[in-house]
Length: 455
Image (cartoon, rainbow, N blue to C red; front, top):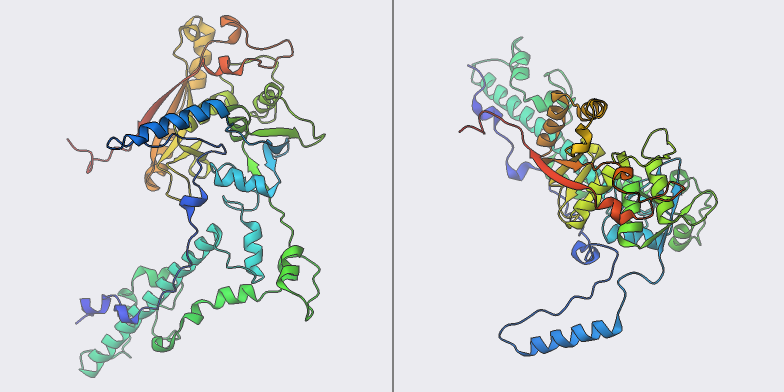
């Protein structure tokens, strides 16, 4: 005489809360049409059944040879190296938008990814909708939490109605001492985990579902928008009758800047040649060899002054892998959130999730590293990793549905053995020759599960 399966049926579609229409997303295909902050001049397409397309291709090719238009911007983008954060700061808002929209470089200092602090502050003041990634994540979490609470309440109402019907039929009275235990036993785990009452004696408000409007779901957002801007941003704003929205926008100063990792900044400086880095202390321009020396020294913690060039320095290995995947067309982002070095996106984080997670590991396969017993012992110490380390990392990537890629960097012999590429000051002069000595091999690891990987 227990409660049947009918008591565990989910609520019908008519009993669910009406979902609010989500705000329209920006046109990301147009906003991120350029994969890199460069201008390209492609040839027109070839149409086999149209002979005029050949003439158009020839005219375009000749015009490009004669005009020699540059793919780089007329004025270089500027950034400032900060030794405190070991990153390059970009403060100009126009430069920030260029680097983010054309290649997804860097992250906002006050945001999760895209620099959107100013948009969120304007949304708090009620001056904009604030459709940022942080706001979207917050709304989705609130919707999931509200859905679980409503589902648990609906299931509780169904169980109570079933118990009432059985009590009327004389099978069992709801005032019996065993009734609360039956009710608690058939409650789904979501009702217990959400903190809702799980006994009959507890009071649970049951609002009328027919009169709930979309305004009740918007209540938290309306309360945020009605908050005083002076309390949210710390600005001394006097609310008078002649205050306009333009005055509030001007009073909100953008306090966010773009942070570039050392690999991203050096790729923009050396690989693309569109960024000029200055020292934040004296605002002096840093040459490419000098900036490379700074990146090498700050790849250690605490920073170490590198007098000699070691081929397996952390920055050299990480930049070789970053340059390798960027040259293949991937959008490379830091992967510290998932315990890896990099994340690889097909087009960018606004289009899809990362498909691959990359770990950078050195590989000492050159005969130089096995020439002496001391070198062999040093290589064994650097390559040694426990099995549970790779198992933990691979398990994390499996849970987030990413493929783990181990990027093995073939470490060349020291430059002193094959000819020097640096000057007397210890700075690398021929960076191209230095990077050409490295090779990258890719190895994909997947978890082996018996029920999925049988012969």
